Image 1 (spheres, rainbow, N blue to C red):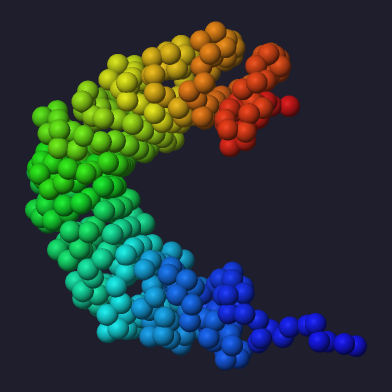
Image 2: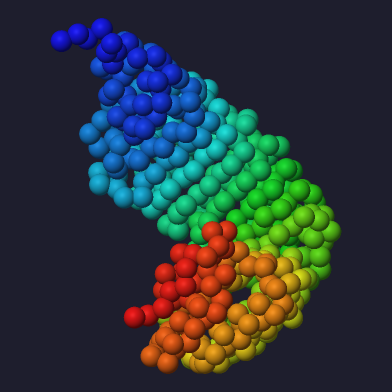
Length: 433
């Protein structure tokens, strides 16, 4: 049989091999490089190593000797680095040695990265592990000059370790650092009047545009430092967790000072595991430039505090009707009458584009009224409109079917996400059978 038209794998163009290798996981690429010289040469393409994600449980459990090879041979190509301990399957001493060796090798090779993500970083282990990892990581970060994004996805890190890392990054890269996402890493910080190390770090971030942080570490001093340090802050994401241990409420004066300094400021408030009116009032001051608000009530209720969710939603309408764009209300265990407030939200929040409600509707006729309002007012502002009510009976099924027939133009468009029912991610109208 003639084989003149066939091309051997080791004779494929480098560009083609690079495309193929790009589909492989990190460690599989290194193994593929041992097949032949042609494949090894293809591995030297910078595009394969721009983003390096190391899973210390999965990737190095068997092929741990390849970890240092990545740092030595391809580390200088890396601009985005992710270190993940999210599902440890190996002994913490082994993880510690691997992490220390890898980061030390990067530091010795003077690798400069632009983005760093730490997932479930192993600081919750014993002190000797945390100390060695902190030392080598701090040494590595002190040598960085171009870090533009720092993200920590972890609720189990010790707050002092987080603050120390942030401070080191701010000192070395504050002039270029644009995005800091601490997620829930500072959730366990005890409330104090101010946190000097956090304030010192923020004062060095002169070009910061995105910040995600826990509410319990904020204070007037922090907001004032942000206002004086940068005028380019745009996305300010605040996570308020299931606790009442935060500081004194942030004053309107501090918010106004931050708004004046950062004219394009947009605030995202995410409320987790509570929705009591008395707890929300101190947070929702009138002059916050609130663009996104997500409320997740949780399953446990504090019977000592009034829920009064109606007042909370009315507060949103009164204070943020001109700024609110994205709203999620997840209060499935609440039994208050909220039907009329849903329609009022739609009517008064003029910029609202995304609305998701997961709770109880007492009367399904309110859904008909909403869509008749859409048709009468020619409302086209919504990109996402999801209602996920509970207790849909046979009568309500008929209402849903009629809505689907009468207003099908809203559910047949690919650029809109309208739904009723549990499958809120689909662009069709759902109902219970």
